[in-house]
Length: 104
Image 1 (spheres, rainbow, N blue to C red):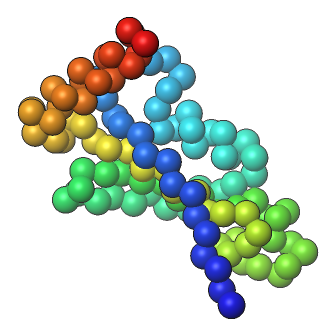
Image 2 (cartoon, helix red, strand yellow):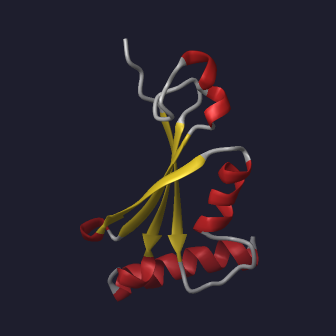
């Protein structure tokens, strides 16, 4: 029986720049754990950019797997491209992001 497990993280690309944050800061965490970046995926209709990562080779060697299916999950990190959304949506995301980052 094949089990396809993956873990997804959704982020927003926003005009509020926070040092050390963003899609690549999350990606670096998985790269440091031995994951390998496979592809960048674009979903224009959904305004998303995504990166997907295969589990580390050391987690697959004992099972003779190919780096896609294994005991550790595949990782998908998606980024909502806020600057490509409607101005109405951008304002709402800006307000909630501002509140979370600066007021909370």
